[in-house]
Image 1 (cartoon, helix red, strand yellow):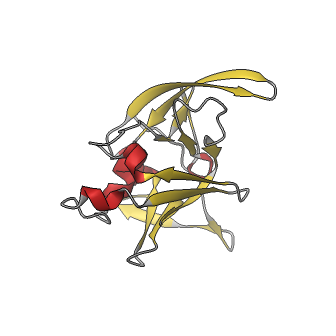
Image 2 (cartoon, rainbow, N blue to C red):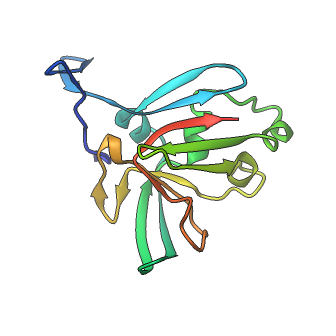
Image 3 (cartoon, rainbow, N blue to C red):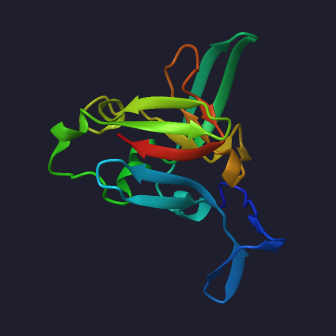
Length: 165
C-alpha cells in the first residue's frame, strides 16, 4: 500500500522521471537530511520513507481554537536519521549532545534532542507522518508528529529539511 501521494517536480514544464525497472514514475524528494558534523546529506523520497518500518500513533494537543486529535502513520524520525548510518551505533552516549532541527516550508523550525528519540534513552515515537487521519500526504506536505506535547508546537507541517547538530 502506498502511504504518501506522489508530488510532481516541474522542471521547465517537464516532470523529473526516475526509472524503476521497466516503469518510470515521477519522484520528487520529500526533504533533505544534512549532518552538520560530517557535511553529508541525503534526499528522502516517498519511496525511501515507505520502505522504512511504519508505526501509527494517536496525537492530541491544544490549539488556540480548541483541542485537536489526529492519527498519524509513518516511520519514526529515529529510523529516518539512522537509515543512512550518519550516527555511530557503537557510541550512543555521543548522541546525547546532538539534536535534529526540522524545518517546514514556511520557515518554522523545531528541535528534537536525539536522546528524546533514541532507543535506550526516551525512545519517544516521533514520526514523519506519511498519512494523517487515514489520508495519504503528498511528498511536499509530510508532517513531523510529536506525541505527548501538550501544545503541539513541535508538530510541524510541510517538512523541507532535517539538520543534525
